[in-house]
Image 1 (tube, rainbow, N blue to C red):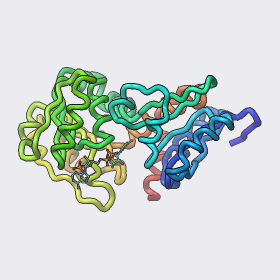
Image 2: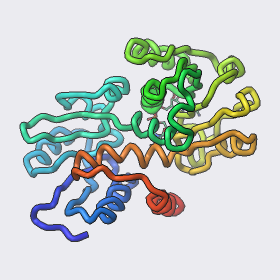
Image 3: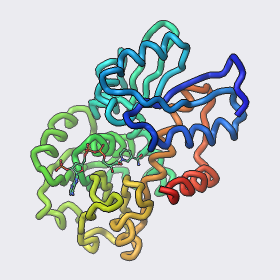
Image 4: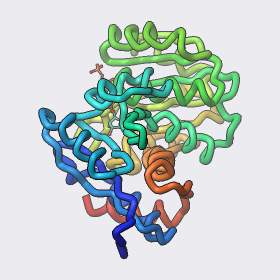
Length: 287
Ligand SMILES: NC(=O)c1ccc[n+]([C@@H]2O[C@H](COP(=O)([O-])OP(=O)(O)OC[C@H]3O[C@@H](n4cnc5c(N)ncnc54)[C@H](OP(=O)(O)O)[C@@H]3O)[C@@H](O)[C@H]2O)c1
């Protein structure tokens, strides 16, 4: 890195922020593209969030990525929001405009859709039903991604059914696929004829028990996507691979969600390449 006084600077705000992947992700692209710029990790306490945002704007930052626990505060602070941010009620990218406007976006949905397109092809879920496991923030991104990919119906299963019902009620009018809430006991019905299962719960993360599903209820040409990326091959993905199903891990979503942020901060659209994946896999192995 060789910064000049004219460098473009952006941040990643979180509390804590030491585990954030964005500096490594953006750092790879900055190096690769030879850009005079940096993405700085910013540990920001929740009570300081809006003060820090104002300070960053005054200091000429181009914007900031936003991670836990600031995504809702960023949503509240933004002057404009995209559909994915509306759907999620959360913002993970703040772009600071020269006229003082703060643009809020949520790039999780575009990241997931791009990863699914890359791994499975653009039409894999078009006009077909899909299963969505979970009803948190990432599940909302899953609904918008499946809308973008043209799915006909989204069958939502969540440990707490009422949360899935809230999600469906909030998003039914915003997206074109039909949203259907089912109980865990209706798994076979949900799986039947579905092109894909997208897992968005925290189950299966390092040390946490995994969801146990009878994958034989899925069509033989179905795919399973797990957005959890620690470990990279979750127990669910291992079972899917063993069952001969296509699999998509969570690293693709992570890489692709950074593309619009990098473009907004540094003015160049970067690409997701095998070299980038190898660079991030190395970091994941060290965790
Ligand atoms: N790859 C990426 O780029 C990317 C991006 C965003 C998030 N993620 C990952 O996605 C996961 C979820 O994130 P989030 O922001 O949606 O979290 P969240 O809003 O806290 O939601 C958590 C979800 O997991 C469910 N859950 C938690 N523990 C469970 C268990 N033991 N059994 C069954 N369900 C369980 C919750 O069900 P209840 O409603 O019943 O509590 C809820 O649906 C995290 O692992 C996160 O790292 C990955």
